[in-house]
Length: 134
Figure 1 (cartoon, rainbow, N blue to C red):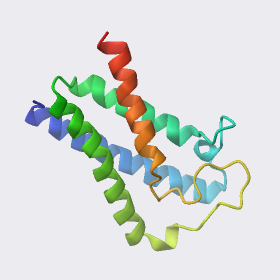
Figure 2 (figure 1 turned 120 degrees about the vertical axis):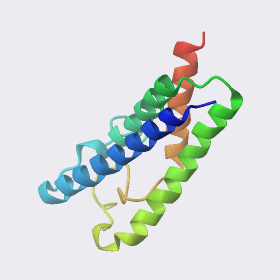
Figure 3 (figure 1 turned 45 degrees about the vertical axis):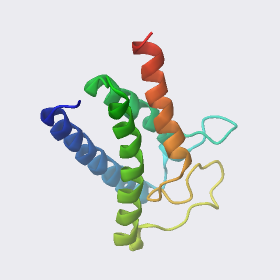
Figure 4 (figure 1 turned 180 degrees about the horizontal axis):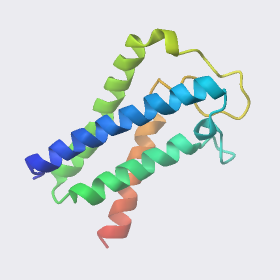
């Protein structure tokens, strides 16, 4: 099972991530350019998607999941994050204009969670399994 210290560190990681997203999106709003939301492939994958993979891979490396319950907790955290992001969007309505009309973007609204984010989170977990569990 995951220790209490690791859970506290995960909470800190989440808080740092929230701060990064808020500061980054404020920067984007000011400069009108979002490099992370620009597609890097033909199949609508952007920097945010890559960050989802990296974040969940790093999370796995840190907590070193051992049991199926650890993995279930990781997957569940993806859904909890989705709910938190949805709630934050409701609280920050003034910051959530649509940007779908911009060419070559992945997210219409950077404050809204997309369900494919869960796929990229799972990809980070799978990358961990491939690299560390073989």
